[in-house]
Image (cartoon, rainbow, N blue to C red; front, side, top):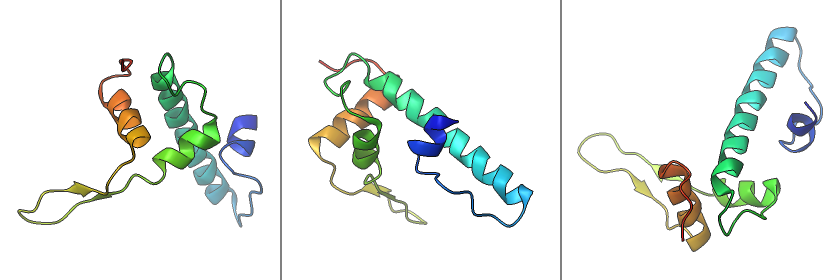
Length: 97
């Protein structure tokens, strides 16, 4: 709960009813699961020492654009760090050399 509250920037639960609070907590819980998996993927890699905030700053800027019809989806240009983090996650957390 402490990590959800402090690390994932869920400071004040300013909601009008308990259903919204439960939904917000659920979404934050799912986000925490994703962050833990990403940290696990970065273990034993050059990015192991990054803080949660640094990791989040790298991955929050990754954008995928998907078009309807015959056009392919595209990503914006990724930095070297972003590319390597994405590759680590795609490859089932296999460490890059």
